[in-house]
Length: 129
Length: 420
Image (tube, rainbow over all chains, first blue to last red; front, side, top):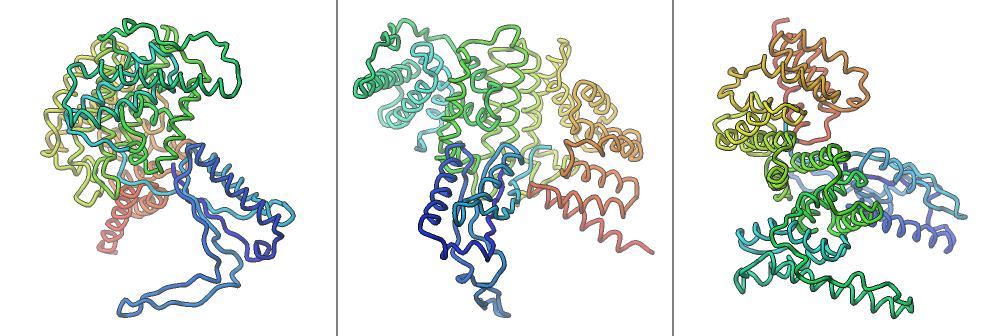
């Protein structure tokens, strides 16, 4: 079963720009090795990091269908920092992986314990009746 | 790594894969390395055969090419061992015995299947390994069918091979003591592959429906060699009888068409006849098991030319036997539907109550979907609507979810039209 695993970084403490070089490196090394482990376990489908919320745009169509873009949201409390699609044997395995990412190291090497949102990916055409 | 080859040669290669792999394993033992060598030989064949024509003895040709790869493999291993200054004291047990060890008629396909479907593997790994080592599919094709990157699938397969190596499963048919359990693991994996096969071309993934055909092909191989096993015949019959409805099961945009609304003229009558013959020949032999019963139920459905001709009392009786044999909640659900068709929706709804506390159905849509249907039959429109909506929220399959949403919308609309 496939899940989308969304890493929601709090707007507060996850100010990676304020971290020491050592902490940033430890965080990146963690993510790198997490992705490598996922691939080696045969569970990795897709994983991407997203640019910061100060780059985000909200887009709506006007009456003619043309895009209207809306502001910058640097003050949001929580933002989507990255996501994965994983393919696992059970929901329990998905929880386990989410907990692992949640505990990614932050400042001073302390676990961030970020909220990770898990959503099951819907499957395609129907199983046989 | 996708092969391009005319269909005939492609089929021949796929059919020969397990036989060639079996022969190479008998000679060199190392399952993981042999499996890689055979895949390489298949690629060489796919490249050369279309240009140079089929060799006179394709099977012997493939065994020879794969064996050469194995010899290279051991040479490289030895060279590496020397470089790493690990004194190669091992006796040359890897060295290939004479060609005579390969019996050209011997077929190890079923032995291989027992190995690839071993209980030590997760189901996802067993499926992947079976499709590659026995089915002769490339890693890219398997990755494509399951919509994961090729590197991920390659890892899944290589871990599966490692697990087999670590578990020390011998390359031979299981002993009589283990046979029943091991066979049921094989049949379960084939059944899962069959169910993975989508029923229509949908989205970016046009190859997926082929998994059903592949499962049928593999089940045929097992049946050819273990014809005396009634559950093998039962599974093959079940696949044929279910797959026969393939063309009627989905509409033009991939939407789900339930059994009672299918255009039965689209059913494959020829395949139905084969499935019916198979299950009819098997049932009287005794040792009736769940696959034979499910095949018998599928046969009763398939033999009804119109939905109103369905012999529900017989289906109910068959589900009754299946229910005693198997405590799967899906069987209880289907038994409740059959009960409703014979004794009215109230009787069916009563049976569903026993499932309310079944944890295996918790958070899944099926119980609500069936209850919605039976409530509607019983005239409880409000109850049906509520259950259809719940079922739609819980469904994790898009066409099923869409079907349930449409049912809910239809009931809502019909309710609106009723005089208050």
